[in-house]
Image (cartoon, rainbow, N blue to C red; front, side, top):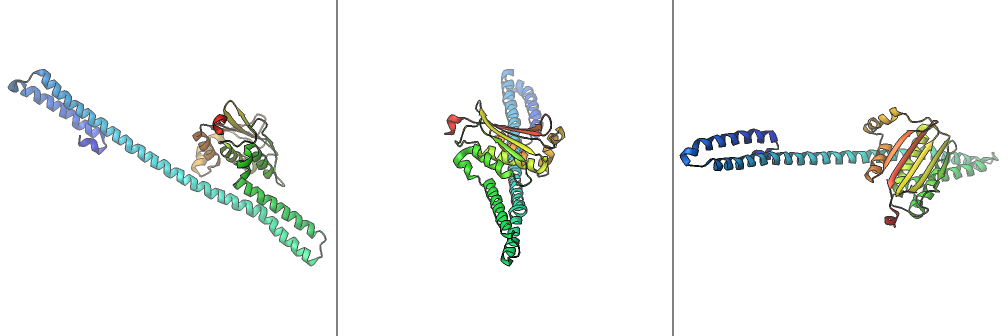
Length: 293
């Protein structure tokens, strides 16, 4: 029993088996002198064998618990590191968006304002107005992406429509949003999850797909909420699917983190090649409308 506390089942077995054998042999040898019947010797040996087996099982149980606790601690550390990497990536994306977007138009507005003050360029005022208008649009788009207040008030359908509109820049693709099959303007418990997934998928299309057209569809059927993002870009191969664990290990956590969150909610995320070229991503998650209200 003392050996059971060492978390080594094989040590318990090595001690228990010889102990049972020696006890039985000693009982058998002493039985004639003690007048002990065989049934009593066998019973006492069985008790000792039961204690030995119990010590082995207890050691295995304790070892399993320690391993489980260690695994949970490792998972917690990994999730914490993942969260920090995601936050760092989002900060970099925000800085890049502000620097390459609104900041450039603000600088252009400053130059146009200098021309207006000199009064030697009749088109300077028009350029100033255009630069300020475009910078305002980009800032609204960035703020909407970071904190889509419309999601809380008008639901996923309207939020996806605004997300698609904000993605259409000067050189961006055409984004068609179809929410006819959605539940309407009523917010649901899965709105934030599907919106974050749509934002990540759309960002990947804009960065990598080189697509001219993107289609986003949100629908509800049979107790399942479904989001489909389809593009006509460079496409998705089986090699890309096999590299997802590798990309996760390298810190490319966007789609991987979305998949983990959807699976935690009982859903799924699949990304594959679209027939005819391009990529199609499908996110599903259970949704009970009777429990949503």
